[in-house]
Length: 141
Ligand SMILES: [Zn+2]
Ligand SMILES: [Zn+2]
Image (cartoon, rainbow, N blue to C red; front, side):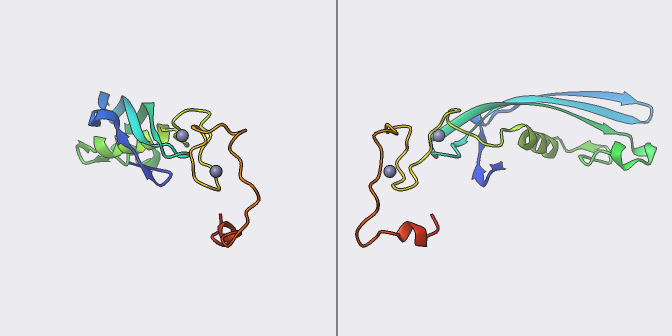
């Protein structure tokens, strides 16, 4: 799945899903719960990052009601498209920014070194001089 332009994979490729289906005279109610780890690059420093995401999502499908709101987009005929639902619910439940740790310092905008490994007080750049001074500005950085 894609978040913020990066690819994230369920940890170990296994997602445990619990699905409850309640049937009524007019349709079905579905309750989906799943927990998975997501692994992918930290959005600040691109190191490996992992989070656990809990999904708790409900869908109601009452085809006879004539109400669009009560018709699940994940049900077609008698088939529940669990994969599409789980995917969308997971995207909604996933953190907007996925970081290797909450206080990730990110990359140095000048040299690209991970500031998690460098002492920020120690890691400074002098005013750029020389033939490449200002190149970063030209490149829009
Ligand atoms: Zn990071
Ligand atoms: Zn630097």
